[in-house]
Length: 75
Image (cartoon, rainbow, N blue to C red):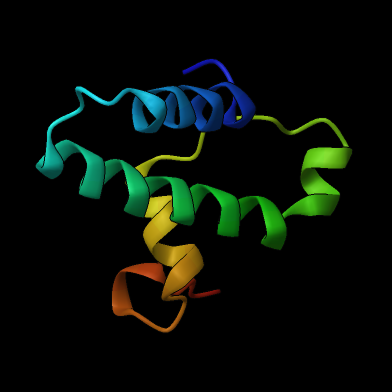
């Protein structure tokens, strides 16, 4: 997706489609929740112009910053 806003809109379109299968619906519901949480946690960056669509690792680390793959070490 071009931006996080377009990704959220696409997920909402998929959820509004009654023919979406249950497995896809569950996946999209989780993804949409993670995207909306990401937006709420990064309001300042988005307001400053950073509208990138976060990848799966960014979403995971936003939800679980204490996980080893999300820790940032300074030398």
